[in-house]
Length: 352
Image (cartoon, rainbow, N blue to C red; front, side, top):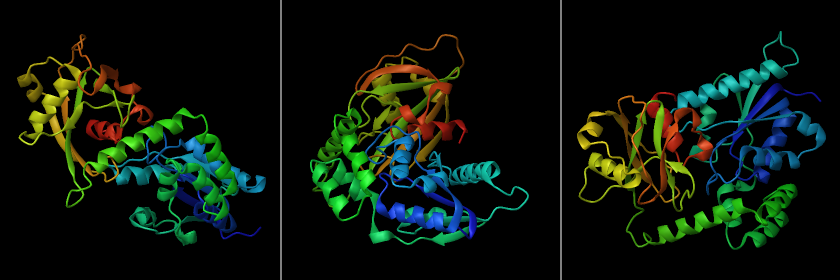
């Protein structure tokens, strides 16, 4: 089959993979010898916005394609970098470059590359970040969006939703079957449903507000001797995940006072207040619009670097924390962390 490009690149979250995505994939395969699918939000802990792992999403995608199409499809996980667009772009460039080196059938010739997608809303901004690749607009099939599909699936109407999705071709039939299996006797499915129910009740408490509320929180990034102080969350949202010590700012508090209060309440850290204040190295605001399922939440993070010591201060979980622990920096990953806390840590440590 004669194609216009050696590679087409399609970036998406596919939460879940619907018929709009499938149309883009098939259009890409008609335009290029190989289609590189970069599956975004990879390695994150399950949450209402990102309930499926990148391997599960790849299963959904490949189940919809023929053997020949699957041979021409290259699926690669892509981690988010919410507070550093330049690093995210570099990661995409490096990933695509490595795949082209490995898969280009004519290495002595420059590969012809196209970026394929559609500009359904502000999330399509990434299409402007790669001017070195030709841009192919695939259109928005039936104006489909994954968000209402996902919301309906994790509701009491999930089975009716799946039947309707199969009938009106919102979802490919193989994805309907995959999701049906996922929803039956699956702890992960129940976990997401429980968290969504919690968030729904939480939001109802603010339903009578004259405008959507914006919450202000604080988080403490406390480092000592290559370890970071984390807490395990006792309840939803994020039950069982590791998080930075922190919480909501009281009406009469300054930000730093709130941070130190939450730090003590959740970890029982007994380092004197003057020492903690003298250990502050930087303060930053983190404001990704999707960072919290509870609603628009701005957090002020304080980076504290304690003097190195072979004896880390004793800590104990309290308040909203099931437990507190000093965790080696090498052991943290987005798959065990609450919300965007992994990315806050990376950014503050200068690793992002």
